[in-house]
Amino acid sequence: MTKKLSKSSLLLTQEELQKHILGMTLFNDLLARAVLEDKEACEHILRVLTGIKTLVIKKNKTQYVISKLSSHNIIMDVLAEDANNKLYEIEIQKADGGIAHEKRMLYYASTIINEYFFKGDQTYASVPELHIFYISQTDIWKLGKTCYPILKFLGDTNTPYNDGLHMCYINAEVDDNSSIAQLMQYFATADAGDFSQGKLSQCINNLKTTKEGLATMDNFSKQIYEAGINDGRAEGKAEATIRFIRNTMLSDSCSVDQAMVKLHIPPEEHQSFKDLLAKEQ
Picture 1 (cartoon, rainbow, N blue to C red):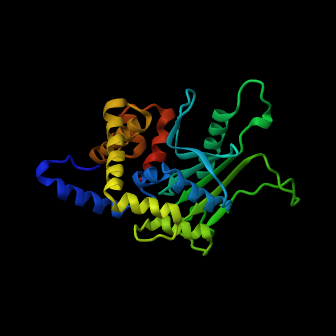
Picture 2: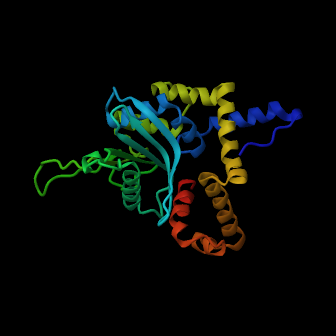
Picture 3: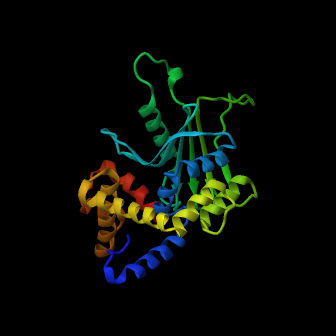
């Protein structure tokens, strides 16, 4: 979080802010959120991931929350809809420990589909097509590949089974020289001087080196902070709760589960906070 500005130290504060932002990668939540909110940058990422060079985003939402009364909420890094009404969810995962990745993707998929299924007189044919890209810093499956698309076939034949749900695990650890691997290498550096990724590079260069970009980043960090202090919005409350959990773990030398019990966090919300903590490791 940026320091409170004072008239006597404004220049120094801006220099410190820029130095901090210059070192961020796309595995940093703050930079990823700012970038994914840029429609053209998000569009570039999806074009590379899908291989569809003509893909056009109609709408994209970052840190989008789907609230569930009977189970824990999900907070998506970005949910986008293309011109053909197909949905794309990108989840960026920094850490790889302590998470049932495949179960998490299944839960996210079912929640998104349920949220966007067209009600009324529509048939099951109206269930939206959904593509989920789970991007991790490390090769969580440890099989030496950049991409792990989930393939479906009928029985023991080579006949594809397409139910409209497409999942793919992608990592920045393995470089197979593919276009997706090149994108992942860029994710891991987000170098402001690297213009190899078109609109994505332009967006990051703007955020890291221009006065307007620094103001945008500063504004994002303030929004997250103020959400927790003033509004109690889902992402703000999560940020505040995460801080309480960390502080309790440090002060009481206890595990994350013990900290959540001490803080009286409802059991049904424990996994959500474990996921958020793991992303920051």
